[in-house]
Image 1 (cartoon, rainbow, N blue to C red):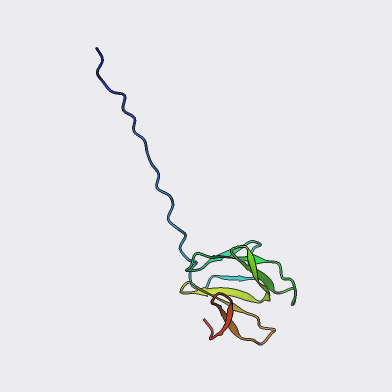
Image 2: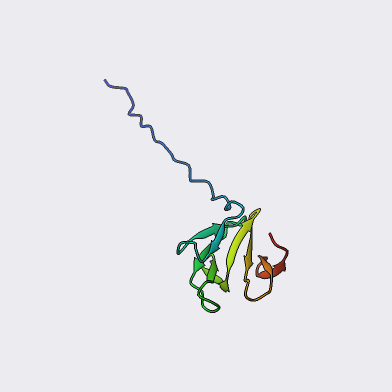
Length: 106
């Protein structure tokens, strides 16, 4: 009589950790490849898009797939917080806080 049990070893792979936010100074600008991304401290994904107004040297930006900027010069991150700059508008730096708000330089 065979009393041995058939035992199976099953390896369970843990899900990957959530992405960390992008390093300080990561930027999206005209020189970034199409679809380049920044991840902020809220785990939102910021993606370079084509600009819809402004000059050909500017970019558009989407946050989690929703466009939030049409024509800016650059988007950057510091301590997980996203900032944008439109040099032509003269509006200075802006920081994302459920919308763009005037800010000091990052």
